[in-house]
Length: 615
Image (cartoon, rainbow, N blue to C red):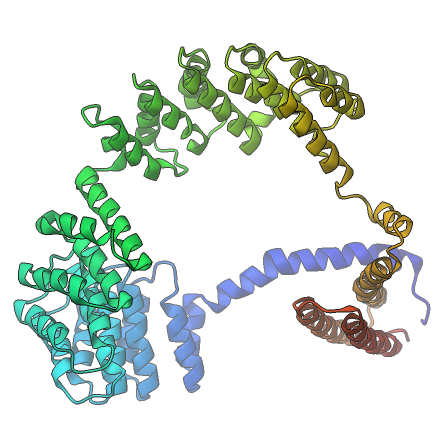
């Protein structure tokens, strides 16, 4: 049958869409999940293909929560696999797993044995790297730490020494290093024997201090002296952070960093300023949670406000929400303002018991607060809820009474926010126009100038835009008139549909720009039209053969796969062309010529393939 039934052509686009959605939403995630599953990992590790086994072991470490069987598989290959690259990957995978969870004793023993017994630099490098990574959640034996530190005194390839230092830094951030190790690091820092070693050690000291490790006082004295004597910024900056994080047990750090903020080197001065903020944060928080610090009324208001910065995360647990409400009831208006800014991070809705019984009543009380700063923050919080949460957008009318009161508030900023929300939730154009006219009649020019700014945006839908702008252009206040002129220009320059934009170019006599725009649009649209047309045709033939129960459907599937491959290749060509640098007219025509040759070949391939499926 050469003709394609009409019903097949009608159903084909929907079938094609269903196939694409099934591939994206079901088949592709399912195949990826199966490929990365424990069963697949075990099957691939059991093959004789070394690259496949290495990849499987690498993916074993990426499992969300590797269980005991997966860890046992890694231990087995780390010890007994006959291929060294596979053993190395098993070590690295154990290190990656150990960075997130405690390893069993046999896994820790495998890593320790790898460090002790490694004969070549490559094996030793992989072993110490994995050990340093696993140290985050697993204690490293002292003899292994000493073995890694001893590498600095051995004759090894140059790239191994920085890796040994990095491993010691990762271990030192998780557990105290032995005194002999610190003596070795201190000696190497004072008299480096290799290029770049002093910089590597400076970064290591920063890592140890940032992780909570306690650097010895003699070493900190050396770092303080090096901060003033060293000339390289890439060494001085890590030293600043090492001293800043060591400030709880090294009081000299604050004065030293304060002096360094006046350094002639800008990067060093900025790092010192940041280091002082770290010291202040350490003194402020200590071991306390930010919420506990924010609720501590014995502290200065500035300190409490600093503690509220880390609270800006979306949470639903009752303790955190209760803390936010307690801050919103604080006697200090600045604390209340900061607490209201946290309301948008309380995930919920108007039907939730917490929101209905506690959050919304507190928000209503804040809207009637005596301090205008609190009222501003309260209406801003309501605006955030109505904008960001769909549950609230559907019930915005329930807040109309508070918004009407806010639109008559004595504070201009409160009126602006309330009017903006009322305009957004207005039920029809007539109500919206009435609100805009009401805002334009406000006695405060600050309110009127803000309203006029809204008229420049296409999102402010109104049938009286020209009349309102004309009224604002005649306003007695100069700021309102300037805002009206800017809004008028913004409205005139707003993006329009392509026929309107093309007509504007034609009227302006910009024929070259119009031609290039048309050429670009046609060049982009052509492969899309060709590709979809043949995809629909091939799908229609596939449906026809399936209805006829003919084996030729298999050939049609192969043709569709080939057409999909060709489409992907053309997409990559367009992707590269789209990232070309700024081109002049002639270069753009050359690029268009190349693309049209590709389109012609693409269409020719489709026409040739259709012969394979039409009979």
